[in-house]
Image (cartoon, rainbow, N blue to C red; front, side, top):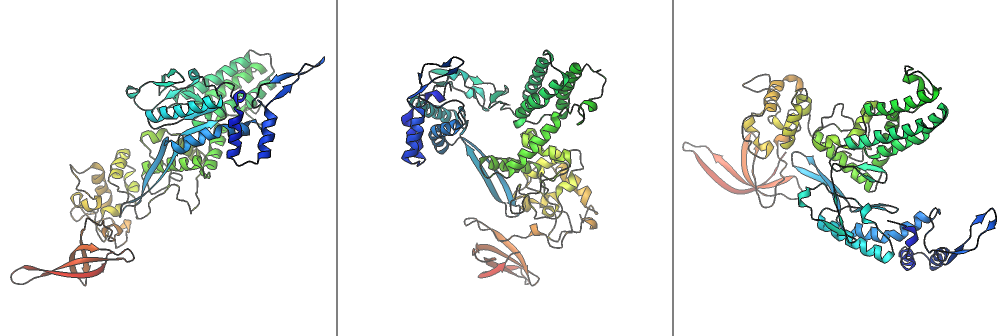
Length: 528
């Protein structure tokens, strides 16, 4: 936007104030303060002649940001309420036995700070509609927008892109790997931070080179570094985490400036110049730790979109980890795919660098972890060099505990061809490497497949018995043991208020000639 504050439509401004149910007297006061005004300038020779001031919101006034937000909010609220925008969501398993899940999602179609606006859409057609609505509002509100200063980018394939016309100009497609600036920070859509890091290093070098050409003392150079250059870099780090080597490279530039202005030898140790009692040059690595950790904890406790989206991202990382241990307290998390490059995961790694752990409030499951088991497969398989591959395979089968692969009394490891009831499907292909490795780790007898005694699993396996949950249309066959007799039946009904299942009971009668007699009897049998 150009001259946004000078182009306020006062009729629309009054409607915007009325939309907030402000008293008419307040609306009249605010309107009268901003229109039909005259101004004079104080000079050494006295006051100048008065001149007419253009109607609008004054730049620099303390109330200006609030008034602009009220004026611009109708468009923001309409787009947010009527446009799907970008939806972030995740699903996680809450019970491996019953295969129940839960999910969380949040949506965002617009982000705005003063006159910087980011429109977000899930499709090109949706974005075109959003821009059309925004253009009509800008026309009505006398807001001028320069399309040449606008950026259009997408994480979809560019081959599917049709040019979008905005304000009679075609918007070019910004490359996904090319950083673009929003609110002073650099962003890319390919989940890579190499170019963003290079820009930060280049900006630091530029500021240092400018300072080197100035006739300043070493004390003044220290002041410029700690109060100008480092805060600038800290602001650029809001959406990325740079490595320690990059931070050391930036620190070397800062130390070089101090040595140059103080006429010190290059061989003087860096520890001398960063000592608090001497030059006290701040290390950008320490600044990054303070910045990200404090903001991360603050965002975790946020109840709005910022906090919700962070909780979803953390749950996505936890799903990828596929562990009974929370990502916050896991000593050595194995993360693969795009989640490994996310800023949130890198911030969690900063906690581990300091030896800190996050203990969420017990009433909040952030992230959610499954506890219905005794021995995790991760504890048995993680020592193998191919564990990252193993993890993907067991996660695909929803296998998390050794208990899911053992007999009803937890005494034996099931054969691969016998675990289909636990997988809810018949496994195809050869026996995977992770399962043969698990056999070597857990069984003491190759033929009987008995488990080592030190595992000490309960005598009753939670995953070997059904709890009677089934759909209305598919009635499963059930088997149970009653008074040392095997009872086989077909499920008919399960009352929602009871733990019993109504079945049609078949009973076998062994005589000289083997026959099977069917009884259409109904029993309530508790399935444990």
